[in-house]
Image (cartoon, rainbow, N blue to C red; front, side, top):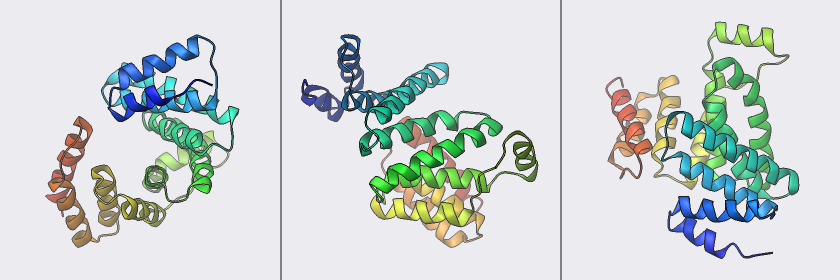
Length: 226
């Protein structure tokens, strides 16, 4: 099998378009392996951060499909399970509430499986916490509507979300997005002092992307309410 040294270096150098193009050419030439596909999935996730709207949705769907195919080729691969779950989660995040609940159950299963392989991965812990947070915040009407469509609506609490957000924080304490959602859990539990500390920490961190800018804007808005 051809080495992935070149595309891995391009990923590390954040040259995502060139790296993805290189791997896509290999796939078009007939190469098909778990190692190739999870890397393509990972590139799609990074490229999505540079896109908006329908273009972003399409690259995420493409990445999701690469990730799921990688898992099919090697169910024991942690990196395939990890990137498939991450990109699947980003696709689910854009769905309407009813569809999000249905697909969210599949996402939870994927996250649980990946975390069985590597229990301390902070990105997966954060994603599972986001799932719990979303489910815990469903309104009664949303739950009722979902229960009429699906046999079982997933169950989760703010405390479930808090456990995983805190575990992610222990692994990566300077992650703005995780700090934002961790503070939201404390606000939901009326623990405003802890929320303020986390929000201030997030606001003071360097912003590495336009997404970080948006998260910090939300942190500032929440801080005014604490």
